[in-house]
Length: 433
Image 1 (cartoon, rainbow, N blue to C red):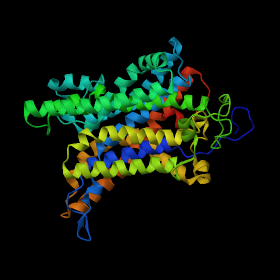
Image 2 (image 1 turned 90 degrees about the vertical axis):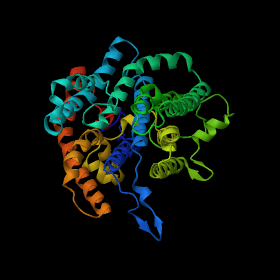
Image 3 (image 1 turned 180 degrees about the vertical axis):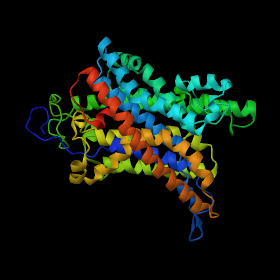
Image 4 (image 1 turned 135 degrees about the vertical axis):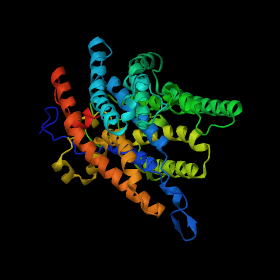
């Protein structure tokens, strides 16, 4: 196989973003399986907080990754800003989301939540079908689907965001200012609405207004989407100002005219450098994600409001750093990576982690209904053992069901889309973005 007629085999690079999506999905499952408190004690210390995965943080990682990949689609002109390009964009999003999403709603209602078919619940099912569900239904259903509503709402306005960004955010400085403004502004918004709810209603615990206006509300989550979205033009600016003495060296990139002269702006030299204070960029990025998990898990275990108010902003910063660290040198070539296969994984075992990312959509939509069935069957008296059994069975069941629906629903939808668009074949990795 050759890439772009160059006679060179495409790189067999580990897709860190796809892996991060899969890991974030697994953390959502860990959170929903309900780890027990004060159950993991070692050397006289309670380490149970390590099990308290922050599901909300993981979902915001999804949002930031989605924002980046949608933005990259527009800025690299995979989706041109004209009528055919916009139609192609919405067709891609529809074939990626709708088949499995609607199959999940139908199967969930028929098998796991039969009470949802009652006539007085039809209006609520309509909200699910129209992506206006925000985690508040008067009956039990597949709760995690709220994030799909928020994502699809962002997809609907993404072309307008691209138009406005391209018109008004034309420099790297303006992009950085916009990122800082939206992140700090929405953090202030969350604090303000949180205090207002507490003043008016006395508590935010289980409060539908908190869910509706902070947790699931698209405007309150726009910092995650927009920072990811704006990373794409920022990296394009970085490549346009690449110092002539620096070779990307991490995969083939499109030809770029280096800046005139040898004077390099400090931020450009820092961004193109391999390390900061002796630690590689990727090391800082992975460390930031680990630190984010530790802080958010600790805050969640302690019942601190910080997990609701501070962690969202930290998630944007850590995920943005992760995306930048792993994409900055391969921005133009990451889409030409070798498709995931057994031979690719044999040559680069790290790529096996990408399987979690490929199955992440199915894992996310199926784990909660399975937990409803499996949870009551676990009767072990030890809370920690019961949690392990519950988590293990739900995870294995979700893997099996996600694998089946990936090949039975997601892959046929991808193939139909390619046939309908009559476009050149792309890797399944790219299709799953």
